Amino acid sequence: MNEILTWLLDTVQSVDPLVRTLVAGLAIMLETSVLVGLVVPGDTVVIVAGTAVSGWPEGIALGVAVVAGSLAGESIGFALGR
Image (cartoon, rainbow, N blue to C red; front, side, top):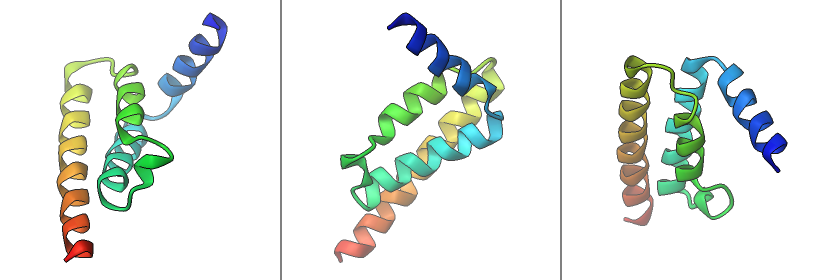
């Protein structure tokens, strides 16, 4: 089991930080807007992306992307439900 987790974390760390941040923001947006979170929870994607953060600038960028994605997803969900 440890080998699988090590492989997963190494794979996530090998992804470009910009792509990783954008995917996390998109995942949280889709979770809060279109109920994609029932299949792949956006929170899990954000947590896994957070394990690969190597410095405070990346952490701040990830936080901003997650908050922006969440606000966008909630706004889309409100517009769809309205």
